[in-house]
Length: 229
Image (tube, rainbow, N blue to C red; front, side, top):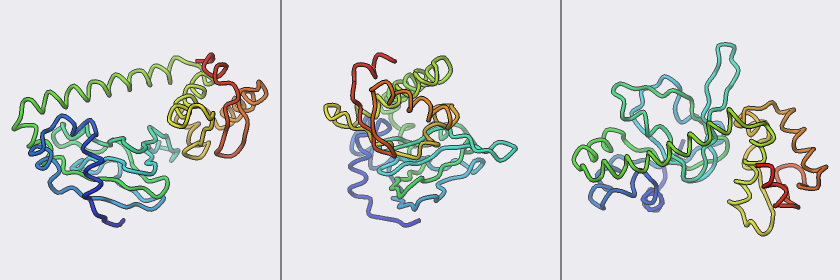
């Protein structure tokens, strides 16, 4: 794990929900002891059970949040990408520990912040505290929508919704989709077996909705894709 220059990285962090409600003085105080981590693929950021003394912001790359079952099987909780924050909620719990493991899936750049410095900033400003609460409430609402999708919708619906989100992140007019991680990891994130993932992808191609292979796909019929959702 290498340290890098954080000047440009902090400008990127300034727009993130945890900091956009802070004024400049508060932002400088909250980012005291900030570190920029440059991670190699497979490098661990934190381990389940470690004391949660820092929180993190992904600047580039993909970070896997996962837990290990008693039999050693890995359960992916989330795949975090650019702009996503990690472990910000647990910093408000006294004596808290990380509930999951966090590991870089590829070369990644991550900002690491002191939880104590951030809390001190909020304790000194009621306005900042309410601003951050509003931002976190919006994020919680998005997470509730995600939980509903994972628990109530079919595997086909979950995969098509995921592909539609990737399409929106790309140039929607081109129809191009690039899968950000391995298919088995996407399947695990969407709570389905790799075989189910492959079968649904095959069906979508047979129906003339998708084409392509590997990590690059092309949506041939955007309307038909969205009708599945």
